[in-house]
Length: 346
Image (tube, rainbow, N blue to C red; front, side):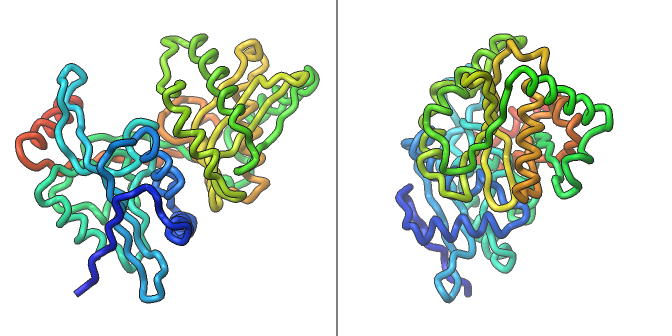
């Protein structure tokens, strides 16, 4: 008989557990920043404050962390006009904040055990697992069904940055860099644990200006999200955490690309840049500079995260799909199931 996991109901975890959880994510070739302790705990303390969370931890005979499953009791909205939500068990760290590739962190030899535990956990409660990475399908309880799918394009940097995208696209990027350099624009990379909080404020300002200039002008990345990202910044360590690609002109910050660097991966999360430089392709040049910096630093995967915007595919990105899985229980679960059936039909 296998031992039950340790269940923790606090966001104040010991340093040893945090390091072990980070190592699980780093050692997994498909491990995600959003499934690790930095994102999950910072999210719980900020955007998820007040949620009833629990973190299940499995350890080996030597005390090494071998699996971590962060869950939360939450309410899923059936419709934005309905004032109440359906009680669900979901992934801690998912929801507001735009986490992708969510899921547990599990050593291969623990997967069957974790799957059995999750099935028992979902016997009486609706299970809602949004943005679940495809690598975790084997952990799903019987009866869970896919109800949402999201394209998350990514680049394989092992082929080399000079082989990404079409020849014409690469040539256009080189011309853009030459024009920007001639105009006095410089680029700078800030690795994890080196950025000041003011960089986030500048990112938000530039992002807001960019969105206002675009059609619609609406973005969920606003001042309400800053507490989460300031917490991520303060918790960064030298090789793991928020990183930034900057563009400056005569000392003025005119572009900021923001993402998360860990192990041999980088997740590109947000961007903002001065629209006065649109004709010089500053936005594309910022991404290109980040791609090249990451490749030179040994990054294997440059992940564009959710969204099928055409510019991602011009860089040569290939889709990886996140899926939302629902295991309905009771009338509330049936309502959620109906919601997603209607969304697919529409």
